[in-house]
Figure (tube, rainbow, N blue to C red):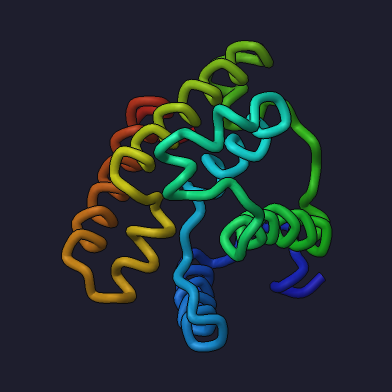
Length: 174
């Protein structure tokens, strides 16, 4: 195995640079900035349309942001597909309900891990919708446009991540 196909994580600086290059290419080629959180709301609207389309048709939010499969929805699907392919490529893919790091700190309970992940997801999507965007929208696309709010959001994302990691995993990390 060489350094690109080993199961070790890639250098975060290389990944950050490649992410920046990708968003520049996205704007240059497709004219689209990154964003993901609206996709989850649109997907919820698509699902709700299956059961009560009249309700979705009169909701103010879905009148403004139509539930549909669009460029951003395909971007999010591409994240999942690309992540899967990259993990398979380096031989690091495995299905695991409780990650090793979590298990070492909190035990093997799948229910506890699922509950905490669900609560974290709800907080993350609530915050993203409240702020009108997610880390990819504010952090990557906002800073690319030299937006002050993007830089403030990016600093807050890092500080929040550092604080959360310290609370969950402690000072020693693992």
